[in-house]
Image: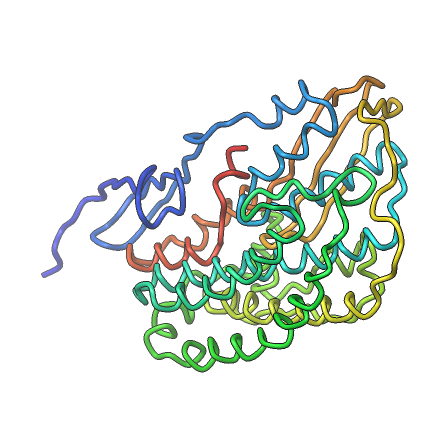
Length: 367
């Protein structure tokens, strides 16, 4: 005789160890099975978009560090590209190569935290994430050489970068690029065929290709569903059209595919960095621009392939020193809209793994 049950609601967050920040999931359950889920956010609510309309274009660069604070270099880059497009500011070639190197190092650092925290959510408590933090620290050492900071870098500038790399940077980078592939191989040996990891991620939280496209997902979430879409290829910015690299994709669109895409993207980032080091020209690293810029009236949108997906900045100018309108297309927010479709029908334990496979940062969700 079947047991009669009634649906009940359980809140996860906004302060919960598996919500990766101040995020709330209002779940409706039948036993342990999820029958509905509503993402609730707004607990961080820093209002960066409105604050930016009261600051000059240069003063807004540090704000971008605080969006996805695990990928600050990428946020810097997307913003300055939008302002340069709006104001018609050229960028020296050396600065373009330095930007690419920093952006790809940031992608690796971000993916290390994404994969490590996902594995932590799956129950591999601390060991994998500590392995990955070990390598991330080496990247932070490189960022500290060029910016003096280890989290919020404020390195990009309108027209280039804040300063050239020091003499010790390239030897340290070369050492990192030489050694990092063996560490990624080590992760693969530990994890790729691990039976517990396969049980927790394989076939769990499937997002079909059609669903991913319909919700405007991007980044590893979209590519994990088998869509070969990367802004560095389809709409190249900076000097990305000068490099050879592949776009890793999944086949099923499950949590395991999203994990594998991030692992393979780290390998491709190393390929790009290696090519950029060989092609790095000499010369200036910044175009002189007035501190109080007065871009002509108009609007501009620039987007990049950030570690989490399409990060875009839309800026409207009224010919004053401050943006008239300022809006951010945040990949974490858009990718979160897939959470319900991916979770309904699965159990509570699966929800934690599914959510971890999206890889969000609440700083750019609430912004």
